[in-house]
Length: 266
Image (tube, rainbow, N blue to C red):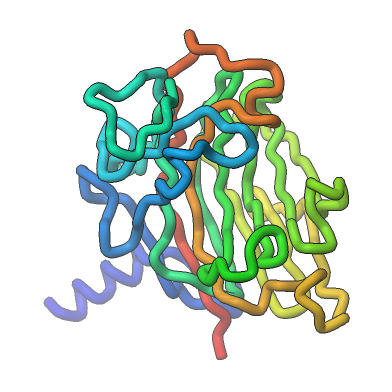
């Protein structure tokens, strides 16, 4: 019996990329709020307003904005003003969720299978920031595995931000890939991160690379420190809301089938 159970477990285990083993995952197989042992919520800028001139309020432990149902994580952006108003409410007319992994990594292969929201004004992202935020942005670095803005449906972006390369200076390292059914079908948004380079892939197809220049400075390569994962839908903002927000299109949801992190075999 034990051998049969072991065989069944091995048969259903995710297949690791070559040279890697599974280190962390969430398969979202239990309905309810997201697993609190794996995820937390980022709400720190609700009262003052979020970066990039975004319009949403990020809730915590609120199933209307983040929940697991039918085997997927649902992050939902909604047109609503909360009543009664939470203590940290900043007057926003939209709600959403911004989830952070409690674990952090400094290399590996990362894969998130997701279906994206569409609708003008939506700005979903799968991305990473340093666990230690002491250096600030952009000096600490940012890795954008997937960004999508609703006014350009089917165009998926990946970017790197550092002190030397960032969108404020218009020097960010970025690329776009056409995924025509991004809002109607699931795709695997992937990142291969080594000490030498960071590679962005969709469904195993690379479309952007950022190389370590070997200068030994955080200005160009701050990616030797642990970073955590972030899943969110922003509403509006200088990019997501560049053509306004279509309230009639809301609510919109990003569905995540799984998140898997693989570490290199030592």
